[in-house]
Length: 365
Ligand code: HEC
Ligand code: HEC
View 1: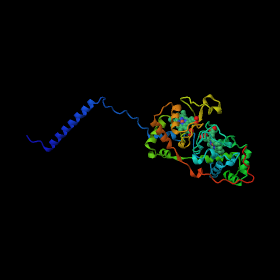
View 2: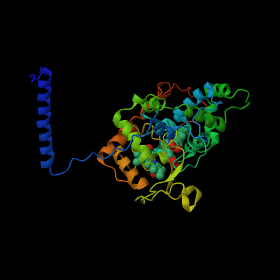
View 3: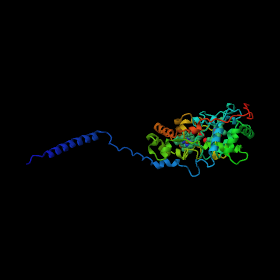
C-alpha cells in the first residue's frame, strides 16, 4: 500500500476537524431549550416612489406664483406687510403676528393685536400658504386676497375703523402712491383696498421655504438620514398623509379634529361656526407641516407646546394608534427635515415710506 500523500493527509485532518465542529454544533442545538427560529420577516421598505407620491401637487392646487404677481406688486406687498401704520394705533403690522424672521408665526398660544387684545386662535405661519385650498383655520377665506382684509378691520388685530382710513393713510405718502401706480399700471386710481390685498397676496405667495425633504423629493435619496426616512415611511403607512399631503405637507383639505377618538376640547367648533352644517363640527383646515419644528405652540388654539406630544396626540385622536417611543422619535426626525431656509430678502424689515403731515395719527382708543 502506498503511504497517504500529503494532500490526502491534510484532507483527512480537515474532515476530522469538521466532524468535531459539527458534533459540537449538534450538541449545542440539542442543549438549547428553544429550537433556533428564523427572525420574523421584516416588512419590505416602501419603494422611493411610494414615499414621494403623496407630496406632489394635486391637480386642483398649485403653489406656483400667479402670473400677475409682478416684481412691483411683490415689493409693494412686502412694504404693506411690515407697515404698522395700517393699524389703528400704528403698533401692529401683519409681521407682528407672522414674524417673517421667526418662521412666520408669533409663538404665543393666542395672538395679541390692538391694545394687546387676544384673539381666540393661534397665528398660523404665513410661509408656504400660497397653495392652500382655503385660508384660516376654518377655511372661511377662499384666497389670500380675501384673507388679507380680515386682520385690517378685526378689532383684536389691526382694528382699522374702515376702508377710508386705510386709503387715507396710504395716499398721504407720495411714495406709496407711486408704488401703487407702478404695481397697477394704467389704473386711474390704483390706491384701492383690492389692490392692497392683491399686493399682500402676491408677496405672501413668494414666501416659500425649501428644505432637505425637497432634495429627497427631487430624487436625492441620501438627503434624508436613515431615521428620517423611517419616519417618513411611518408618516405614509400610518396614515398621516391622508390629511397632511401635497407640496406644503398640508393645506389641501379640511378635516375633523378627533376623527377616531373625540377630542377633549370643544370650545372652538371650527368650520361648523361658518357653515352651521353638522358634518363640519370640529373641522379645521389641515395646517402645513413645513417648518413645524419652529412654529410651536400647535393647533388652532395653541394648546399643545411640544412637537413629540403633538405627534402622539395626532396618532391617538386622528388615527386611533399608540406609537412606541422610537416611532415618535423617527416621526419627529422626519418632521424636522421639513425645516427650510427662510428667504433672507423677504424676512428682514424693509425701509418704509415716510409719514407726512397728512398721515392719520395713531389712535390708542
Ligand atoms: C394680531 C395678530 C395678527 C395680525 C396683526 C395679522 N394676523 Fe394673520 N392671522 C392671525 C391669526 C390668529 C390667524 C388665524 C385666524 C383664524 O384662522 O381664524 C391668522 C391667519 C392668517 C392667514 C391664514 C393662514 C392659514 O394657515 O390659513 C394668513 C395668510 C394671514 N393671517 C396673513 C395676514 C396678513 C397679510 C396680515 C396683515 C394684513 C395679518 N395676517 C395680520 C393673527 C394675525
Ligand atoms: C384625519 C386627518 C389627520 C390625520 C390622519 C393626521 N392629522 Fe395632523 N392635523 C390634522 C388637523 C385637522 C390639524 C389641525 C387641528 C387643529 O388645529 O385643531 C392637524 C395638526 C397637526 C400638527 C400641528 C400643526 C400646527 O401647526 O399646529 C402636527 C404636528 C400634525 N398634525 C402631525 C400629524 C402626524 C405626525 C400625523 C400622523 C401620526 C397626523 N398629523 C395625522 C389632521 C390630521
